[in-house]
Image (tube, rainbow over all chains, first blue to last red; front, side, top):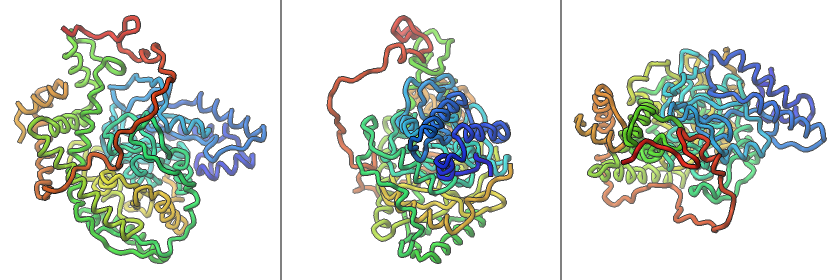
Length: 485
Length: 93
């Protein structure tokens, strides 16, 4: 296999054994990008000069006999809503089409300290609002398994780049499923960590009580290794949790004997693709054969998750996106003679239609006379959804479900119907509302497209997620199948 | 169903200038989403506390200390328009 098709842990071993250099790995990745990027369209920006310089530094360290870390010299792609100092960060929006951040997000800083080779910035739905990357103001990313299909979203570029072997791993962000749903559609591993475990400093805010950064990778071992690096308290994010970061690779035992897995009956709804249903049932059987205990459970408030999300997330967004006014950075309309008209035209031209729709919805839900009926009601319903999980986790270690009701859909299929688009996140949204971790991994194929298995865990229970996910991966072959691009 | 007037009011609050066709489109689409959200009215939330945030955090403080701040030039580098060390905007009054 080509170097760009390998995992970070495989490449690390090759670097340590001096079988390959970081420059060779980096060049292999850019060669792949040259070959397939016109069909995948995962990248907004490539940073080849910086990447090769960094790879050269790592090779010099290895040549001097220095020890290198697990991610050192390994290429990574970063979603274009995380600030990279001196490198364009657009959120795939006209509003930030020219924005060059003066500082790095904490996760970017952490990756740099770990010796990572940042090869570019990934396309996304504008301001992370969407489930297909069709809301990018630049172009739509394609699904490497079928380029007529979407890669999912909003972190579609990050997911597609990993699936297409245009990178070794990547970072995305997840507010209602924006890591897990594209991971599912592209057949890769994606983790939405517990709220507060990864710093949001330098992540361009969408819905601050839900947003969380996490990794995309080709297997569970890489996922755990990347999470080791990016997790941890950060005083620059006041919602960052104070907790001890364990070595998550210690959970990769392959043993799930006695693990208690709950299967929520509400996640097997009408309209679920039969292929998805079959492979999820096979995954349950696999876990039983490995000695886990699986049982049907109920999360009775599941049906309310989507309406709760589509009040809370837009409400927070309408407030967060108020900062885009054309004054300090980004796009400005030049035609207005007074400042209010300048604000209004800047925002109307700078934002695309989904972003405006959500700002309108959020502004309405927070406006005088509607706050109690919509926003406050949604916050209370959020409590009930969270309590469903609290109760379930008193008895179960893991909750298992499909990641999305269907495999990847065709480009254009849902683009004009926001409600249909929102439904593709129906199984991922509750996890954000409850603040718990969720992981998606490949578990089969329906009509030639990957099917994703979602594992949900207790708050700060990423270790148990890795344990369960690794056991499944070691006993299946789905993560080894590559798209034929 | 949201009226055109309501849409115009919300757009003003959000500082968005909408075209006539956008106003019509958002009136229909927002009404559909809000109708869907009315499902929440089935829930009795009389004695349920709201969750604005999942972590039990309150007033996060840190020590007050002297440290480096971003240089002016760096902070102004993305300005659409500037004059000296200030951001320049169209007339306010």
